[in-house]
Length: 193
Image 1 (spheres, one colour):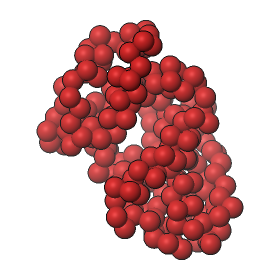
Image 2: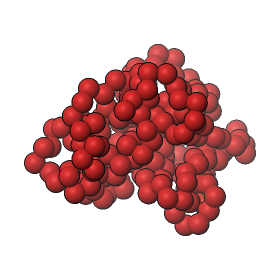
Image 3: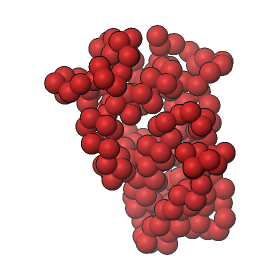
Image 4: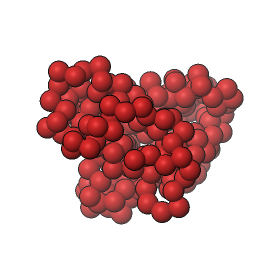
């Protein structure tokens, strides 16, 4: 059940993050969604998803995993491309997001947007040098979608840097919850245009 206002406890996401997954599920009714989603999740997917309402993070992760398995065929490159497409959509929907020649400013704005889409802080950055930073996402060890989220973040960040004029972009996962770390950390380097 969605919440109209930001819940004070728990982990929730805005419906705008769920809409694309729901569209994919509805566009492919022939796929065995019931093998990956509980009946109440399937029921939620068939209801109107309100972009400004808050939904449980677990729903977001489970429908994301289901689309990863059934639509992306468990291909992480497809997920990274989804992240790149998300950056393009975010840029189109958010005038001023991209700062030409200043990728770090663009990434700072991206982080602020992410803060508004989650009931918790989903992304944190550590600046190491002008074109070198670490991006951290925090997941619980039992959250099986952590790697998917990191691939989406990597694709989104790469594309946002490109849109800002950056080149020779390198992203490297240096620690991951699914490998026993306490957080997920992506190292990102680039050169300014």
